[in-house]
Length: 209
Length: 221
Image 1: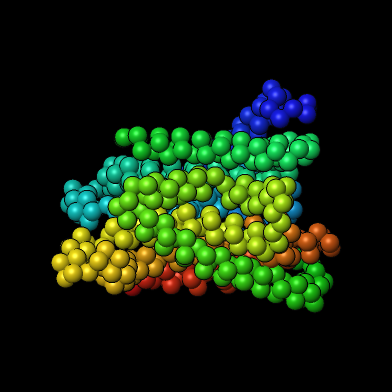
Image 2: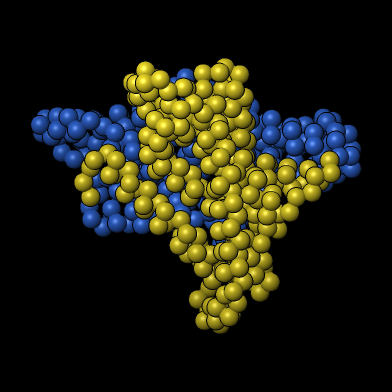
């Protein structure tokens, strides 16, 4: 790598880091959507056991720092670094998504449930045809918000040696001598995160189902 | 992980974890006070009607909400000394956490103030209150009740996020747990106990918030 502040190499390296950030965040949010949906449904519609399991999981995970999961899984599970980071982020984010799903389900008017029952739908049909299609609309915007959080949270992963955007920036800054370069690089990294997140926020205001 | 001697070693060194817990609590409390102040100022600026202060507060919220806490804290820790500003890791932690959480707290306060019915302001103004008086005596007391549960949620986030101190050798619970375990490789017990300690701090708060929210909705149970 050259020592210039913003050479082509530096730009390339940062974009590679951004790629890793987006991959981790995207896989995390996709997996968390599945698990969060299951947990949320367990909590709202499940039997007694399912409800207790979901409640305990959600309450435990939401009250423990993500950093502990990232460091803990890295050192106790025999997984490649990237996989362990995604597992940690997914375990954490699923609990967040579960709460979003629960909020979405609770936000559906009582009349909808009653109407579904009055039509003689069974529980499965009721969820597939009436409740979930409406719930998905309600949870889409907060889910995009959780995506922004996941993008930001990915920066925790550099502590276990993953070269996502923050990690890539730290490596580049390690080569710098001039203070102005280090300060400038922080500005560049913050700017990239900011632009990506503002774009996701903008998209989430545009989505219409 | 289930070897008894590891747990024995952990409980022999339990004061290490307690010291970390104490740092976590004191950083969180320091940051909480600053967060409340920032949130109030931002919330008032957003609802003051002055376009410029609303824009400045908006820019602050947008920047700090959309960039990672890690970047902000490492900037305070690694970049500021380069322009002659040296902060202890305790100061880095509290300032970083307060600036980050304040951006979300400001949105909470703004929403709470806007949630107070307009008639309240009009009533206060018609009684001859100034804008400031009506805010302090009529609006804010009502907004506080609305803001309490989401603000307490932010406090839970703040306590969890204080684990970021581990990245700046802050001596907090996460840091102590990580360094204790990397000394003797007893990772499992160390992280389980640390998780339980964080749970002990945050779970009661979360449960109170959940209960309060249900009460406000007027639901049962």
